[in-house]
Image 1: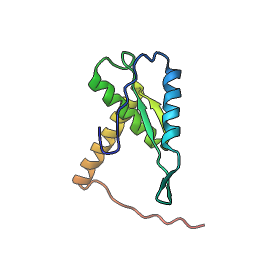
Image 2: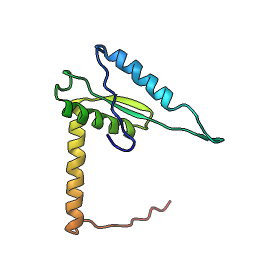
Image 3: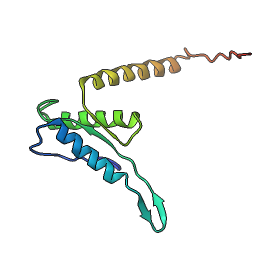
Image 4: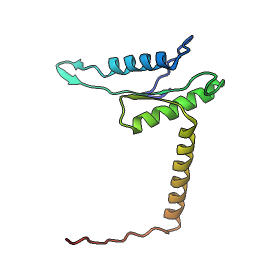
Length: 120
């Protein structure tokens, strides 16, 4: 996928609890201490999960949805997994709209900085 991303496809897994168990095991294994020539290193992982048929039957959409869920897991503090949910699309749309509006405001010089000291 990317420099620090990869995809795992699980077959014949029907229950979400089984997927959760596998995701927990992956995160546990990834987050173990690593010895790099005497230096201890730690890695964290974030997992986004999308499910065939439940979320989509399109491979491209399943990858996109898992990616969206993964970024949501990262935003929540890493070392976690998140199942794709349609609410994530709504959140992404809102964030995209805010970003677009802010870029437009910057371009049109519609923002100003005001300093208001607080005195106690």
